[in-house]
Image: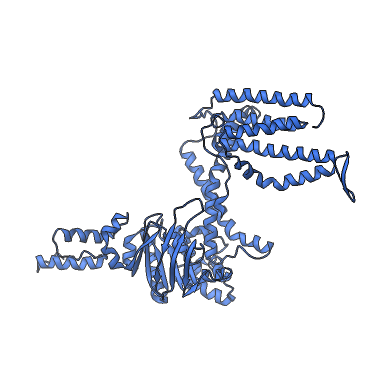
Length: 289
Length: 270
């Protein structure tokens, strides 16, 4: 039994719209995984992840966290918000406190922790996202866009959730800021062994960081499996308007043209190795490589 | 949730009422309100109410929309009805301690209720058949003469247009911020009044910040397109009077005449 499990989970917005945002989703996410959630805009990714921390109530079906039915006692739903931390898209819009420290402390404070505990958590969370102590007394509104985003992420990390869900944490950031944030999250995952869900539009990021992938399509969970397995189904992904990592398309095309290269290569490193091997085979001894 | 709030209750359509000039509709609505308050007896009020039964189907607005617009004012209606019942002299129908209900009081209460219902239903018809944009446009042109005494009519109407435009955006934004703070364990649903007000800070501050950011961005975008106020500015769609306006005006004059006649012919209340 995984840490998050759904049973025929369905949800539709408003009675007027017959179309479901998510329709009969059954998934089981194991503890300690790093899962990418991909899907076309409007495929139900954001709706799905908002069920995992109880922000949305299932229209029908159930959500289990650690085997407990989340909505068995609706009054205690806040408990799950601390267990499953959700970082929204553009989280910097949620900053409101006078200082960075206070803002990161908002979550832990809501948990009712002691002052010392809050302090240690705030500093630990800030360290993970690379916010130095000199910023702690600054107003969050004085920071740069990327820094604001880190502070907002730290605000969720400080709750020390068992599951961390990030809804497109890198949207609108420059490539360097993007890599830095994702690297920090990967490191956090590595150290804490916590479950991380990364909702993303970038197949490259998913291929680089995630171990498993959940593909959402037209309100349904189309597929859930290892990165390799999922990207093997490139034709189907392309058909639903998704893509595969660029390096995978290149390898697939090379394979089609008769080169001996694995078509389910999805990282640049693995492609590099194979290409070097190929080049080495045809021009042995050449120092071009 | 918050998305269910509808402000700017325009119902798109192509009826005669929809095609009328917003200026004419505005003037006629004001005239209707004035007439409602001159209607002194049951006949005059009856005609005013009957007109709504004619106008709603004509403008293809479903009748249940009247109920919808009346819902928020039910307490006011009840309050005025009760007050009216108690504070008129006349034949006492019922007495309890110092509370006296007279026949005249009951009649006045019914009149007041009918009047308020007509008032709300009549003015709602204006907003049901006129988009907010064309309404502000109409107001701008209607009040244009005030420019001469230094009232910035164009600026006011532009502000109204922008405000209306951003209501849905800000509601969506509020929804998002609320979710984000709830995800951090903010408790918005329990606690006493003070606690609840306190719990709004994490929502209001980000909302204000983003509203200001938006305002600055919008102002910049407008300046980039050389917006400099109403001076020398013309409209893409100029308001023109057309046949529906003529029908409307003629109908309104006939209707007003009926009400005034009813007021004169029947001197009593009933």
